[in-house]
Length: 333
Image 1: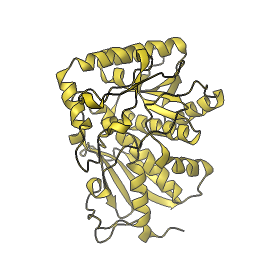
Image 2: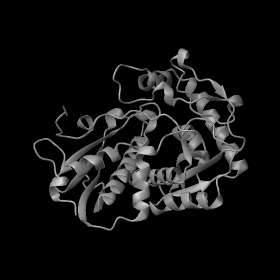
Image 3: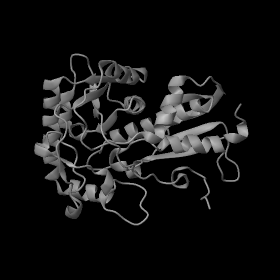
Image 4: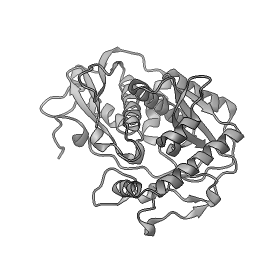
């Protein structure tokens, strides 16, 4: 049984279990690795905040991707609490007068640690955004079905694209890339999150850029635009990539948070099954292209595009220390 002292914060220090859970929360992906979250420990839980000063003004003027990122961090926190044998009692957007307060998670009664929770928790430190070529091996149908189901558990709908839909989506990704590269403001924003500085713990480091797809068959975002000396090398990617579009039932702030949780559950489930993942959200960042992905018949709105496959390990991206993202926490050391 985990004692209450293992959870609560005293004298500016976190209990060991709460520290573990918050480290798990910040392991999730965020656009350009901006890490737009903050946490406020409570006596019996954690408040999770969106940190909009880290929003990308060019790519994310509405703050949609901030809330998707924070939703993913919230899912990690929930899984970590479950893995420590407590029930995460989660209340989304608990106070109307605090719009940046995304969720309040209370540590509920003891709970049996299921095998699913155990596997997802173990996958947390292994999940990476992989921008490298994947093999031509097909993902088994039952694994794809599990990924779809994992998103559905969190209220999302993951639609695996057939060949013609995949080609159409990739066409939109290429259009979005060309549009962005023509905007000076995009270059400035990209540079802010890719230029390397000593001791930097956010942004995208060169080792995480990945190579360039020959003939742009798989149009990965080019993080080396601003620093030509670090432009990517060219490699041949898989012949028939597997991609899926994550949809939500509406386009509200609450749905963005729920989409982040659905996305992270799918990414972690993929990691459990040995499947690598790449986020390819360029067309969703441009309203006129995003509209083309809306499923009007089912009233579904696109929130993310994910590439799945089998590939070599990819480099981790850095994370800011807990004392930078947890209110009231004293620096260690």
